[in-house]
Length: 91
Image (cartoon, rainbow, N blue to C red; front, side, top):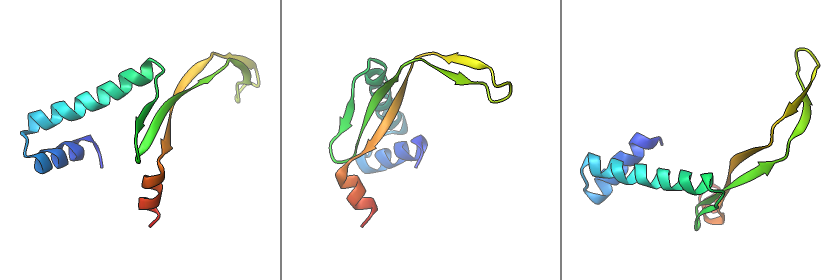
């Protein structure tokens, strides 16, 4: 399912206009993105959680040249599946 399919499902289920459903879906994803950008955890009980993992800088190697390269510290978003979702998928 992609974002457009989610908008369509919301529109049909709640009997909304396409623009109203689109606004709700956009707001949902914007708020999730904003929370993760602030370093906050997003948890949807029974479904999943998203969190930001921080990595320190380190030295790596360029695979072409073998030259040592310093990799900057970074933050990456991670997804963790909830128990109810695991059970539902693996029924």
